[in-house]
Amino acid sequence: MTLLATPRRDRVVALLSSTAGITSIGAVVDGPSRRTFAALLDRASVVSSDEVGLEAIGPDGEPIALSPPALASLLDELTRRSPGCLDRFLLTDARGGMLGLDGRELRAGGRVFDLAAPLEWRAFVFQEALGQQAIAVYQGTWVRQGTSEVVLVCLLPAITPALDGMDGALGPLDRGALRDLRLMQGTPEDPPPAEQRVAVDRLLMVPIRSALDKAPRPAAQASRARA
Image 1 (cartoon, rainbow, N blue to C red):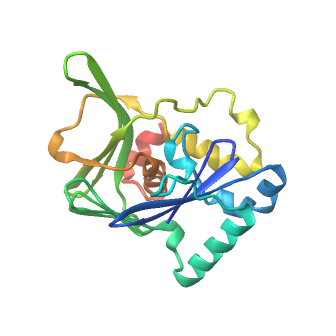
Image 2: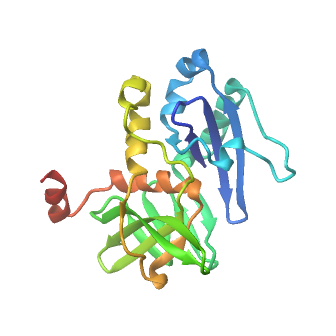
């Protein structure tokens, strides 16, 4: 299960994932509720406000919306039954392979990355032509650990929240939001090799990057980051 929120933390969605797909359950959070459920919101990764998944539309086309207390109670029960579920998701990629994150390891493209061991990763964007008159812009997350290397890709959101001016609008609760907004940024690069790519749901890119960001880095990469 993965928790997502808008940059303003006024909407939160729980993504319940399995190899069969994703079901989302949402709640609208007002000012008083944000204070009451601060701990819950702090666990949520921030994504762009225009993401369709934040509408929490069910398979029948109807919204699945709960009140903040009801959503909090549901999450409490789920974590009681399955400790650690908030740091875990499990899906099947477009090639039928496992795509999963369980807090300790990332599985993608038939490879397993140990999040407790040093690894390298970076965020970037690239574009490719679609036919003769259209261009698609993608975001990518390159990951390498030892001999294992993969690039997670998805379409770039139509609107990516800008960092300029956000610092003053974010209170102590939203330090995590500022971190996630930074994780959304990427530098332009050439398209990665097709054989390295693994398509992921766009809503999961920030949670994946957040997990990678917490993993230790090789000494050489850590030194470059401090330079």
